[in-house]
Image (cartoon, rainbow, N blue to C red; front, side, top):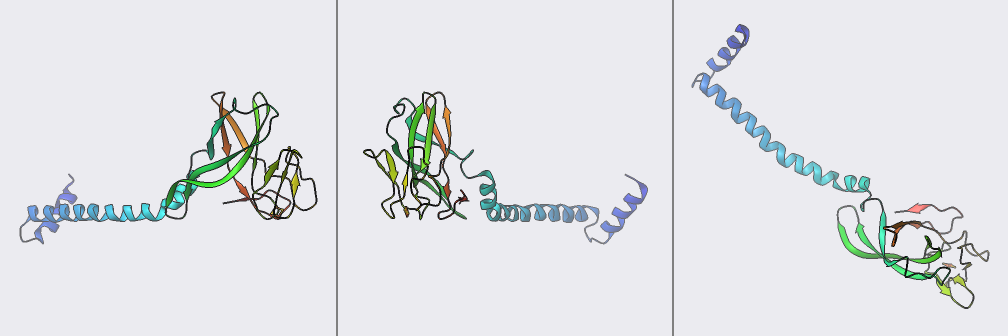
Amino acid sequence: MSQSQSQSDLNHSESYPEGRRGFMAHVLAAAIGGFVGLVPFASGLAFFLDPLIRKRKGGSGDGFVKLPITVEALEINGEPQLVKIIMDKVDAWNTYRNQPVGAVYLRRVASDKVIVFNQRCPHLGCAVDYKPAEKNYFCPCHTSAFGLDGVKQNDIPPRGLDELEVSIRNNTEVWVKFQNFRATTPDKIPVA
Ligand code: FES
């Protein structure tokens, strides 16, 4: 300890009636008080930042959800299969586990390739049906129609069905990056 620092501590401790030991006790109390005050502050900060952190993480890992169907269960070039999407829903402060958030049509077009369309009609968002007799998708709300490849067959919808990203994992699992898109526009614009 330098001479000037010792002199400074001596000056501080002299202003305490209990002397040097009293001065050190006050310094220690101030340090503990500061730390104790920091804990609730940090907790409060984490609480307020939590939705922002979760939003950055994307809420569900890489954004893909595993479907309850395997590749083998889909016939190559067979009829599309409708599957509900069950995911965790996250709003500003809450997480709701295992909620139905939409549905998709799956169709296997090769031994290792599955195409997936969001069931929502890009016209105004109704649920699209599949018509086996016509081999096309049909929307009962305003008669939009789409081919098996998702391309629109009349002028009612602004675009074709919204194809989703697919990932085949472990040679058999079907994972989909579920996403809704804005209706009424010719472009696929993701919505939250
Ligand atoms: S919502 Fe599908 S045709 Fe209008």
